[in-house]
Image 1: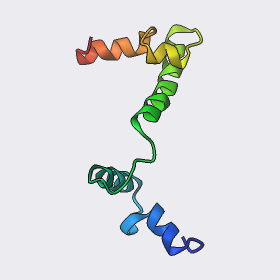
Image 2: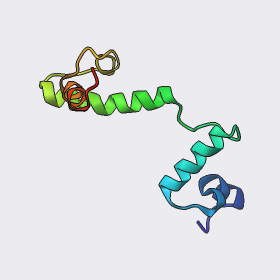
Image 3: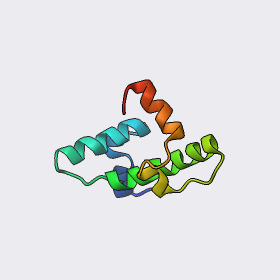
Image 4: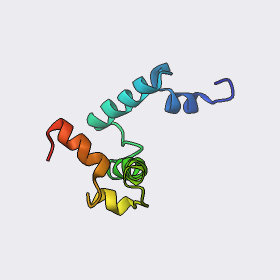
Length: 89
C-alpha cells in the first residue's frame, strides 16, 4: 500500500475498501448506477466458467473436453447431474 499513489489506491481500494468481496460488490453497484464499466463482462465470465467446467467434464468422462463442448452443452455429464439435482432441464 505504501508504494501506491493515491489514484492507484482509490482504483484498487475504492473508499478504502480492502475486503475483496466488498470491492467486487462496490464495482457492481457502481456499474448498475452507470458510473463504471465492469472489468470482466458476462461473455468473458462465461468463458472463465466454461474453462473450469471443461476440467470437471473431462474428469467425469475420462476424455478431453473443449470449451466449445461445454458452451454448446454437447457434453454435460458433470453438469447434467447438477441440473437434475436442481430441477433444471
